[in-house]
Length: 592
Image (cartoon, rainbow, N blue to C red; front, side, top):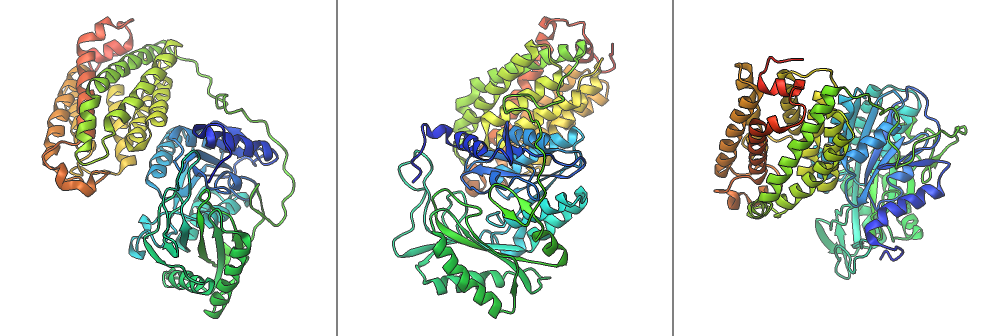
C-alpha cells in the first residue's frame, strides 16, 4: 500500500516533481510532463510517450538520449489530457516531426489523438503507433484491439534508437509498427494494487490462486488458476507466447521479465532462468534480455513476460545505446544542457499580434460559449438521467465540468483581447482537461479545430463560418471513429453539418443556415431513440437504450439550438456589430 503522501489528490504531480529534482541531468519539467533536459539535434524525430502515472519506470523514466524525447504524464492510472500531450510534444519537437506512442487504451487514444490533430493542424507532422502486445486482451485475428503492457519498452526503445540515429519520421514510424507487431506479452497477478489514499486494493486474488492476463491499471486478469510453481509458471508464460508468435518470426528473441511492483528481484531472476532454458530448448536465441521493474503498476504483486522476435534491423536498434534515468545501455557521449521554459510558462513562440476582427470574433466566441454553458447547466440533470438508462449517468456532470472550464477560459482570454483562434484553443483545452472522458476529448478537440479554422485574420466572411463548422465536425469524426447509426453524437452532428452547408451554399445567411442546421440536429437526435448503440459505454446495454435518444446527440442538439437562437436574436446587442463578423453573420457574401 502506498503510504508516503500529504494529499492523495496531488500524489502524481508531487511524485513527478520529485522525480525531476532527482534527475535534472536527464529531464526537465514542462506543463503536462517531462522532456529531455539535454540538447536534441535539430531535425531529429521527437518520440513522445506517455500515459497514466503509477507505472515507473514507464513513462517519465524512459526519457533521455536513445529513447524518448518527452513523456506526457497523467494522473494515477489516467490518461494525460490532450493539452498536456500537446504541450509536451511542442516542447519536444526539434523540427523532424513527432511520433506519439502509448498503450492502446480508450482514454489515451482519444486524448493523444486530439493532440495529434492539433499538432498536425499547426504544421508539426505527427504520427501515432499504438502498443498492442498483451495477448490476453484479444485474439490474434483482432491484434489491433489488444492493449499495451510491458511491450511498451520494446516499441519505445527501437523507435527512440531509430530517431537518435537520424532516421526520418517515415522510417521511425515503420520500425515502431514492425516492433509492435513482433512483440507479445502475458502477465499474471498474485494480488491487486492500491491507489494512494485508498484503504483497499483495486482487486484481490484469492489465497492460493493466480490471476492470468492482468492489465497494468489495476485490472484483474481474465481467469484464475491455482498458484503454480516457478517451473510451471515459466512453462505457462512461454508456451502461451510461442503459440501466438508473429507469422514472420525468426529464432532470435528479446526476453523481458517485468516485475509489476512487489515481486522481488531474486524471484524475477529465478523465474528468468527457467524461462531462458525453455526458450533455448525451443530453438530460440535470447538476445540482450531485461529482467527487473520496467512497466509497473504501483504495488501490484505480479509480473509479465514479453518476447520480441528480432530481425537484423530491429536487433541493431535494440542493441543501440540509451541513457535515461531508468534504462541504460551502452555508452553515449555527454550532451549539453538546454534552457527550457518551466511548467508555468507559455510554450515559446506563442506571442500573437491580434487583428481587430479576430479580437471581435474572440469576444463573440466567448459570449457564445457562455450561452452553451447556460443550456448545459439548465439540462444537466436531465442529461444525466438519460445517460443513466444505459450508461454510467455522468454525461450531464461531465458536460457541465467541461463547459464551465471552457467558458471561464474563453472569458479570460477574450477579455485580454486575444484572437478567436486563441480564445477557442484555450476553451477547448480547458474543456478537455476538466471534463475528461470521451465527451471531454471530443468537445475539446472540436472547439480547438473550429478556432484553428477561424485563425487570426484581418477580415471574416461567411465562408469562414462554414469552414469552422466543417472543422468542428471533422475533428469529432476523425477522433471518435463513430459512424452514422452507431447511436452517438455523430447522428445529430452530421445532419447539422449537411443542413448548414446546404443552406449556406444556397445563399442563406449564416444565422439562417444555423437555424436550419439546429432544426436538423434536433430531429436527428430524437430519431436516435430507435437505434441500438454500437459505440461507447451504452453498447453492452443496447436493449435498455432502445426507445431513448442518445444523450450525446441530445446535448449537441440543445447546444446547436441555443447558439442559433442567440446569434439570430442577440447579435445586435454584441459590441462592435459593425465588425466583419457581424457582416458575415448577416449575409454570406459580406466582407470588410
